[in-house]
Image (tube, rainbow, N blue to C red; front, side):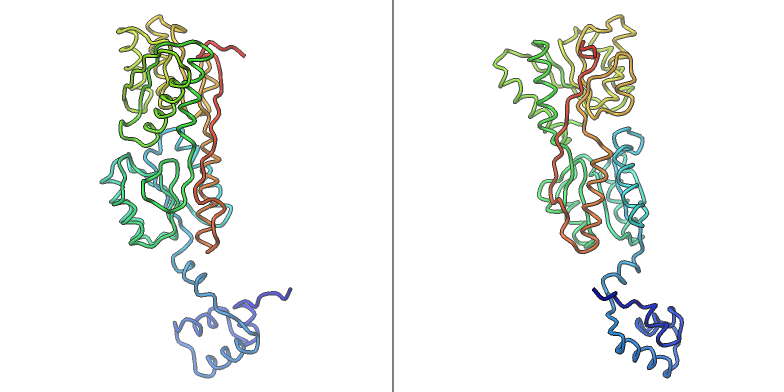
Length: 333
């Protein structure tokens, strides 16, 4: 297969610099008539084809906007690690910003990234995002991938974990392996799509078990501090047989509160995301593993395919989570 003719080849053939050859193509800069004619003759002789799409991308730069709800949350940090490493390996720079999970901040950051003319956008939407977000992105006409949280009605590529299955795995383990008859789901924003889907999975597991299980649904912020407060409240009001926490940080906070209150091991605790500290805690934390770094890598690869004009390998990708059973459920390896 013949090698594709480049602009450098044209410049050498015409006896000019690459910059001068580029000026002739784009009409920029000052180039004499004789030089312009010589470059154009070389273009015709060599059969050079100007790639307008690639040139447009170069003008935009090689920066990709990455929007997350909270940079300081361990799971989002793992996702960002996968996103950033994949973009960097392909010659792009990730410009990362945080919405603090607020819709007004998300709208402001979108405007700022648009002003910076980023080449593409990877976004974990703020809680409550709807068609307004989708419309705003489409009016911008920028390649986009949604990650970890989907938006109803969006047709852009989406990469996330199967949250329904994750909730199912946690509840099924508590009911079947430990015969729990009272379970509390703790944490997360009430209207968060991940929380809603996980609870759907929890309800499905309880229904399939055929057992009478009392399920209590409690919200709190997804932080260690909120987990500690909730743990003390649960210890004071009567502990359930099992607790499914919205993420590992909440679960670690609950475990700490119960330890301080003298109730260590009194209930079975399951976290979510299986962050690095889950296996190092005492007791080690049972958790639903979602592999945030791999999700980030997969989403970044899908977005790079869209940028290049190719069809992404995944249009909608739901990774299967796994339940990693450890000591917080009374299971000792």
